[in-house]
Image 1 (cartoon, rainbow, N blue to C red):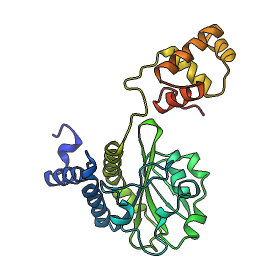
Image 2: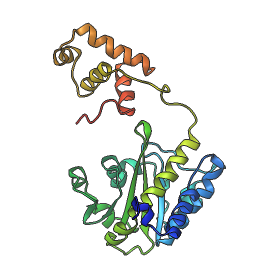
Image 3: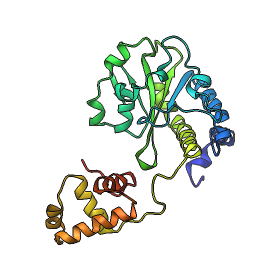
Image 4: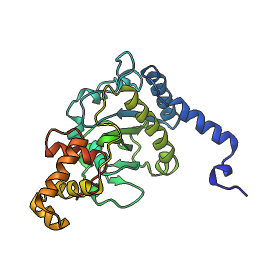
Length: 270
């Protein structure tokens, strides 16, 4: 009997999976173009077209080592009405990046709504009908959010080559997990290869008290209120917050809270 499910997968399947994963792995800028071509070919093998943004908060486009636009020169979004990458407001105006802010697993969307593995009340509040009914492009899309360190979110969509295809429930069931794996590998490698500077002090470790103080500050509590919650003096609360700011190399309280949140020290604050 196999000790784990991987042993149950035929050898040829494991080898093909590893080959696909290796083909989209990026360890240097020079590997960006070949990896982009590989994930483009993977998408095409499923009759899908890929579009990618490595950071939905940034106007910067994904480029190869020579500065050529990946979405244009590799993924082929060049026809009239397809050059979505020219719209610098897209990250704020399109509902698809918005979906990626509230979900970390693959979903698929059409005019009827956003379909995922499980209920998500946040997604229910996002109206995608106008987006799909008001554009001349695909009537459905498989969307893969990629949540990266320091709060960065990437969005990668797979649109059916048949633009009139409305129901992606079966491709989603069959392929979304695999596409999620190769997409995350591709985007993560791209971000690491293109990173020009450190955003955070390395190996920053906050104490339990520092993290507690910042958690309460992040949800709007004053130092006086935090001191009452934690049964500590006002001066002690300020000491812990200032100490955390020093560790995080922050210039003020707001940046201290922001950086702590990026590192995952604050947890969910809603």
